[in-house]
Length: 309
Image 1 (tube, rainbow, N blue to C red):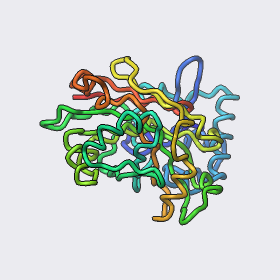
Image 2 (cartoon, rainbow, N blue to C red; image 1 turned 90 degrees about the vertical axis):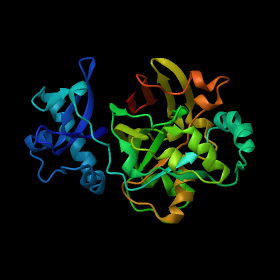
Image 3 (cartoon, rainbow, N blue to C red; image 1 turned 30 degrees about the horizontal axis):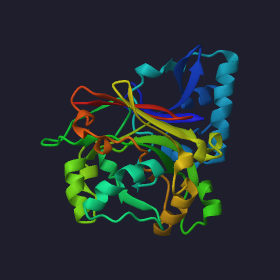
Image 4 (cartoon, one colour; image 1 turned 90 degrees about the horizontal axis):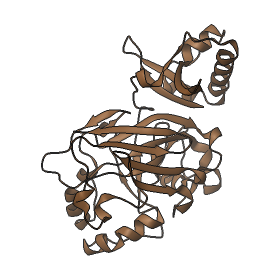
């Protein structure tokens, strides 16, 4: 199931199931459809939907099947008209780093010159603040003085249940589903931070976390290594890779970061594949500029669109 949070006409959160109907994407108001189908106490928020586990998923699937079978359209609207919210109320976001083989290779010489060591024994990560997350079709302002404004498409695992010291074999059981993150970066600041063996401000200006548009539930992605990621700027492909190229798998990352204690609403991302602007022969031709349209895509999920101002 593809399920997301959107803003209803009254401004309140709604749960929407994303469906392919008559050749176009449609969004079904899950609560309205479930209620009409006779389901009582159906969750009205993503938090409650995730917390309800398999029971909510079964009821949601039943409501979708009934709506399609009976031909109901009362609770459907075109996806393009939906005002999406963040797909989950983010608790914490742990971003993977140097986790795709090609990206690690293209950046190794650059970051080594900055005094950074490329770790290989354990996953590398940094924190993306929940406060910088913005939803699908947001406009992000390039920070004042930032000329090296970079993009990074990443698949993100959405944690659905508490996980503490889980082993790698059971780690995927903690994942509710998968979504998309565009890890925007101010490379001038990041370069200085890396010299101090840290990353924070360069990844956390306002709007630096486009996330969404929605979540594909884990039952539809039994093997997340099959996910493919892609990013275009103004229709030009910049990044493309398979999660088979991950150095540390989703299971390994969840297991490793569960030592801190994970819970519903936490995100763990893959890190970016090769093709970032800073690694290009002439980076200034590739850094993001006002007017650019960035589309970050993860197979089986969808496309996350961001506008640069």
